[in-house]
Image (cartoon, rainbow, N blue to C red):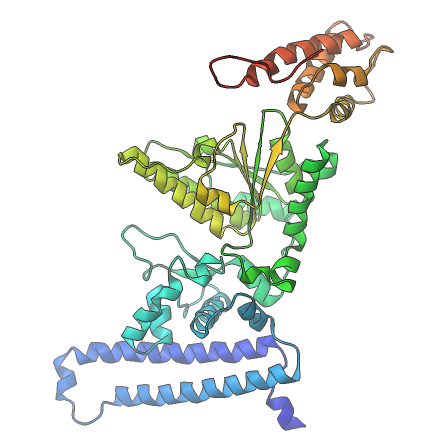
Length: 481
């Protein structure tokens, strides 16, 4: 009975403890091999007779590593046959990782367990030379750290920002939060209250702002089809593991499990409000970046701003909103001018960041545009916000007027909604204008239907200008009674 207990692991963490100890031995062997290589290039090496004591130590350590690795594998197989599979094994099967990719993953998990202490193995060169004693085999295995590899392409591992002139083998690597959660069986917790405030204070200054949402999706008046699409997005953020794990969708998708959605439509139709509501429903902050503010005339500054925004969203756990992202939605340019190449680099970098981002990213645009092919493939949903129908407009009018507002008996929101086909933003402006005009008449003044009509007429003229399509012959898109 005791022998059977000793031949199996009590849990995944006992197994990982032995794997991490094995990595420490491999690290010692790697250091000794590097030291032996330095000795070999000196004259003292040739003066020695017989086998060098350092080479003998390396051989002994390699044999110890081999015996230890075989014992761990036997015990691991025995544990699988006697109990439930470890989360890390389910993770490997879901993403169809090879043995080499599995070993790289273990090294990066070892780094996480080491924290910021010594002994971390982070660069691509060190990771590969640790796992493969032959330099040629290490170079051959470099494909597992390329941008097209399963580890990076699926967002399981990410490369830290490279220094200028640094190649991908000299770059540092780390597991993503998504990988940690899946391997450790930990669900993401919403950020709110004091934790959110502390996290906000820790973020670097950048071309973005953090907003604590004031409401959730159930407070927003939306078309039923648009609401259904937004609720589908919420479900995927909260319960998407059913798709990726239980139904093994993660084995089929080429991108990570982050969600990128595009909200398009006329100004005032509720795109930004819906983004805030999504963040509020998820109990997360909303990190807002106007893409026009990311662009810079200085070489490399735009790319730096893009990386900064995505890093801040990742570190804060916030929903990312790239507002008015028209400039990056169109296809890349084919010209050979410097500006064309710079623009293409920016779009490529943005697509890479979207690929690796593990949270919810929302793009908004006020225009109808043909999407870049690479961006179109990354969109989890494209939702068009049209002018709300009469029933929705009536609900918007009523929701914006507090019960404390002194309304005259002739106020008819149903008629206002039917007579003026305005967007939510225009209705809000009309309400503010009507209440302001009435309040200026005196404290005992009631707000009447005429106040609302005058304000709505003013907003109608503004709205018609913004909805006129580009072309040779102007025409009104909407008809008013």
